[in-house]
Image (tube, rainbow, N blue to C red; front, side, top):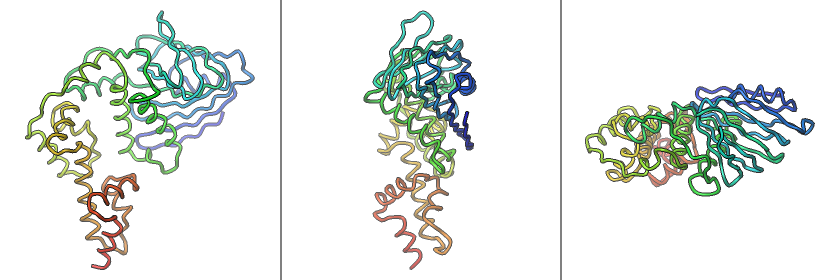
Length: 332
């Protein structure tokens, strides 16, 4: 078995490849759950897998090269499967199996074990473990009230278009980016945002017990609470803000916060964070020592980790690229 491992503050990525069914079982049991793994064509078997952990979300991209069957006696969290190619069937308890393909993903609830059978030899799939407490916490943040009981996801969701396709695309991007040296997921700030987006996106892209409540119009938010959030951001602009933390400052649900910012400021809460940081970047570039300061290090110091996106946002906001602002400081 070949295994490569890289560690970040908020992410751990692992690469695995083996022809041994026993080694594959050991690897997958360590990364996900204790499981049984059987194949009738062991000579063709090869596990090829990348596994990434983002807080309460574990993402695995894997293929087996052979027809296999897997059985997991006990699920410790919610589980999502989304093939890119090929297909297989999943089920829980006495329920009928759900056929999962590149068009239909599967969802399993933490109410016992599950079976996954008849992986086609060409199957390449995402398999995603989502912590129960993380889902519960995200539901409470989005709804602004206590939540009791499991989400009870329906067993299948559309991954061929719309929100389901977007969600799977984000999970697939994260699995790929984890192996990129110096990639965005090396930043703890980005890791936290991706984890939050995956949790929130799963709840918005699927059907479950609380879906109707999430679709209902959010309650209103006072102007005082909006100002409290704005003041917190202005006072500490380099804090690793995300929408969940801003909602906690306002003491409202995430949906209420987003709607209030849309009405009051015509932007998202994180859009306001970026606006405040852009203003600080501009001041820093205008007052920089040109001999020692670069646009890149200034952008990073104010929380912008995607330089291309930062440069576009800066040009759109101020009508010039950040390099010109720094150049003006050089000649001023």
